[in-house]
Length: 459
Image 1: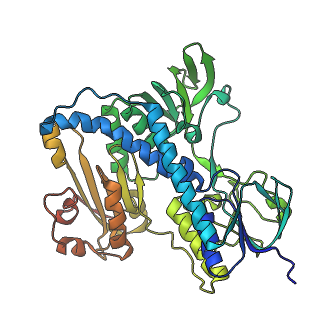
Image 2: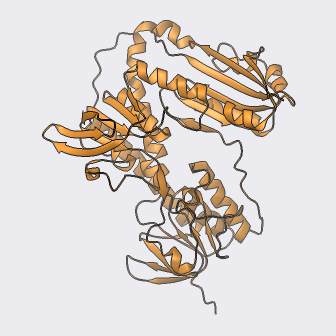
Image 3: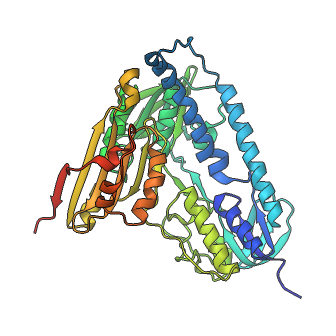
């Protein structure tokens, strides 16, 4: 008779957790998964999916304006925020149901409860106090938005969690942060008709992205009326009869209907009982793991944002799959975190794969850099002034394309396909040998022949 109730207990029903549970069950493991909120995690419930639905909604503003240039007469459009929120909720509820069905079909038992560790093999369900003995435990609790607790008036602010379900659309919103979440929400709220101000402690948005993309998007946002305040942060938030008033350390006074923080996310480890199980934490409260997602405790693993490796949904899914195959399927493999395609769903959006120009100049001795900037075909009739920017970074010694960066419509879709080429170590000659698809914006990627810059490290 075994001493364990289950072979695997998964804490967290987000992307990484549900994938690991399903694959482990498919390998014959007895699996239980605990989720205290809703299946699907941040991505499905209050992250990637609802965010992109709102981004899509915000882009109709441009479409209505552009239609006139193509001969269409469109009546003055109106926007209904509660209707959009209801539609969003129907879709994520549908997706949550599919997640539950998939787990059930795989034989995973899902319990709606917060789960905490009592030792390296014991999990307690807070909903009913039941204790579960597990041979293996997987931590997949993701991350949580940061709001500075020591900021006077912080209780009046929201995070991305609450932004999707606001009962009233904010006509004026202040957004703190400069990363992709802050930038995406700034774009979508502006597109839906809000007056948007983004305040950030740094000198420019999107730290870690290529400089041409950062500058290009900032310029496009400013033309759309988004206000930027750099090198400053909030010092206090107060409630007023008209809404909220925020003061900054730089001496500004700003009024708004909502103040939103998008200043990063922290690993969601508080109160999990990791100390009781002997699991060590890193300097940012992340759970350090090896290439196979193993913590310092042999039978406890962790995947996804809680490990603070590469905090993207597809990465968590891949890590969960690798974990289950390795531990329960007898097929050990680890995730390669290099050359991961990524997108910023701003308007215009950014798609990227590989390294930035700054990173390339630190890693390589010689680079050929190709840049192009142009008005897309649609803009010639719509009259819109936005430009697309495309950039290839090539290791001049091997001709390998080590970075591709795009700003413009469907940049994310292009980045996904370009990810295949970059992962396969395609050369610039391979791009040159590919026939252009005309007329398309993407053809610029295979028709750039002359480097904009030939960079060689001195010495």
